[in-house]
Length: 200
Image 1 (cartoon, rainbow, N blue to C red):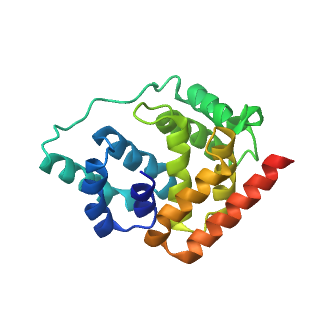
Image 2: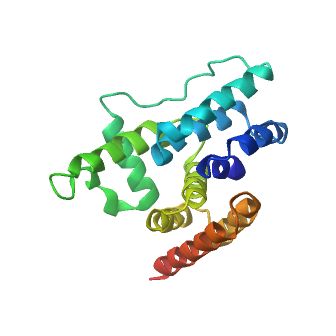
C-alpha cells in the first residue's frame, strides 16, 4: 500500500500499472486499492489523480472484479464537517477542535474545506483505518516533494496513532527505490523533526 501511494504521489503511472497487480497478488484488496486512489485527490488534486483512477479501474476489471465496488462512505452532506473535525481531533489531538472556524476570515473557508472534504469525505470512509490512511498520506506527501511542513505534521500524526518512528523509517526505506534519495532523505528529516516534537 505504501508503494502504491508513493507511485501516485510521484506521478509514476507506468510503474503504478506494473505494481498494482503485484500488490493485489500480495493481499491488497480491491477496496484498499481504490481507497488509496480516492484519498490521493485531497493531496494531489483530481487533475493529477485522474489517470490513476482509470488505471485502477482497468486493472480491476481485467482481473474480473465487478465495478463499482461496495460504497465506503459513512458521512452525509449534513454531517461531513462535524465528522471530519472529529477525525482531525482523533488523529492530531484536541487542538484541532474548532480548526474549521479558525484563521483569517478571507482564508477560513479553506480550513472548513479541509475538515469537511479531506477528513470528512475521505478519512471517515470504510476500507482503510486511521493508521493506514495516515501512512498513505505520509507516502503521498513524501513522494511528491515540496510538502515538508505537511509531511512533518503527518509524521507526527502517524506517531500519535501508533505508526511509530521505526515504522515510518521502514516505510521510507520501502519507497526509496521508487522515489529516489533526495525525497527519501527529506522524509527522514521530517520524521526526526516530528519525533523531536513528540518528546516535548
